[in-house]
Length: 365
Length: 248
Image (cartoon, rainbow over all chains, first blue to last red; front, side, top):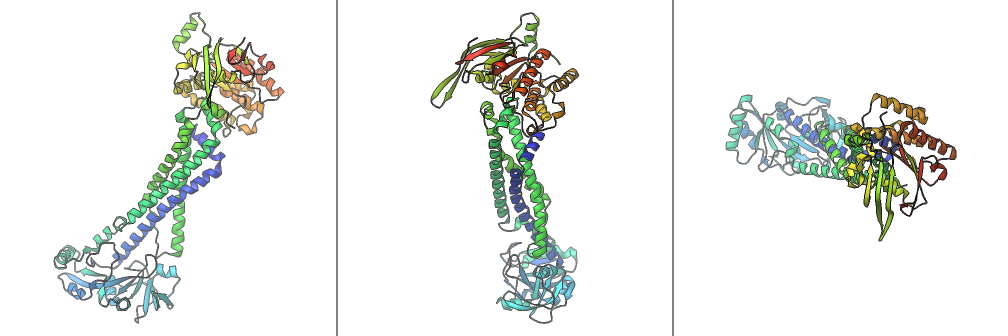
């Protein structure tokens, strides 16, 4: 009967219930979008790292796995590393911010990168033919509505967009490395060096050798690099997610508390009737908590639906900058957060309803 | 249906009655109730003594402020007395905890109010089912009880209106649903507080006849509060309250 009474109560005041569900759904959506964006960006990064075709990555001194580093590796190190035993090939790249959110532009030695990665799959256009040429992947081209042959503006200069390629290799935006080094006043400097070894079994010995001889340069196998590329390794991201969860809990708590407090006031007489015909304090509390549970559940489902909506919007308008994943593993967590906050919010109104004096409640009009 | 009034009784209490020493189903002695309103103490009941034998239809009449409603609330276990004793079906209300009073309301007392007091979001059927569900397994129901209750619904003339919500029912129909709800758990006593106060004369008459039928056919003990002498005339006995005391 609790379920029936609760459902009829919900049906009896649909607007406040729907509004509460919406207001719980919004922070749930925020959590899922944030987690989805983190996951999407990380997965995108992993996919692109794998697409380089390298076995080992050498990062600049004092950098960590996920930090956006400056270009502090001298280019002369590339031939030296290429000469290491079992190293088949080496190439360096340079990353710079392209200005937008999470947008980077990557300078590559085209011939070397082609040799390392197997080259780009061109959807439109062709390889670099001059220093002012730019290649982007299809995500970035779609986001900017660019096509090969256009003159485009990026980092305060015009570029000839000569090619649009399939995504998944190193970066979204490519220029010749020499041009980028010159633009940023860092001639012959690199952000990282990629190494290909002659045999997969030699990756560990080569890394050991590199660690012995390169002082202060973090060295990772690409497999290790990809494995370490995770949300927990992005500085401050976990803290940011925790803050958003805290805000979500507060909003859901406040919304349900207010909504159920109003509902209890509106239903004073009904609570009196229930108590007169033998409803215990526990029964009254359960009806209030059950309603809050429905609100929390509804808010969770709405939040999940809205996260699909946001992914659709982001994919349509900024597929390169903000690739949002749907992280199913977080549905239950977001649901528990919303339900916990909703139940907590309903506790005070529920307890005050349970404690109501039936005689006073019955005389309430 | 088993004898009304047995639902909340212990075997020892029943055996006393079987031994030929009939105990009143309601027994009130030196009942006092003091309210504090702001800085002022108000004595609503000033030593009430009353016995109601099982199966009696008793009406309590009196002017406003005479203490009728307070008596109704105490006998209905909605509030504890300040002093004195109130025994309902052998249970002393003054010694009951809040949860025990709740249990008593589930099994031993049925209420009919002036304003009907049906849950507005539930159908008539579900209003009755709610009272039944709250009593749960505390009330034993035999197939005969079910058949008898179906007959009561027929008697009340609401069988065809059970799937309507209160706002789709007339006042008379709502009061009949409230009566069905009050009877569904075979209570020892049925308490009716101005049951015709919100009804026109035709529906008032119908409800009073129903109360008398229920009393006669089922042996249901009824305590009815009213200020209407015509309504009081339906009862077997009438007592008058004034200034917190029973005068006659």
